[in-house]
Image (cartoon, rainbow, N blue to C red; front, side, top):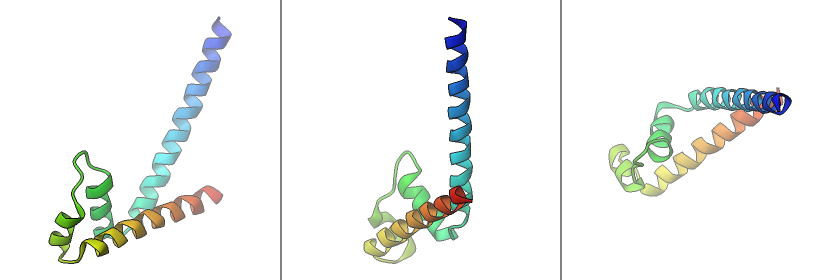
Length: 88
């Protein structure tokens, strides 16, 4: 019984390390975005109550479609940075 408990703790430790590594990679990738990209992505994807494209378009004085494009580009930049860092 003790051996199986130890394996569970080892697996948990490995999962925690991986989660920590992923969070660090995300933070580094997020920091490569410019201020507007960070703000849009934070408000749209990372807050409990996400803001609408319309609301952001009024804040930034651009179209909803442009906000959507900025959001998509920011997500793609993050994915690219994470992939780049995981290959190194």
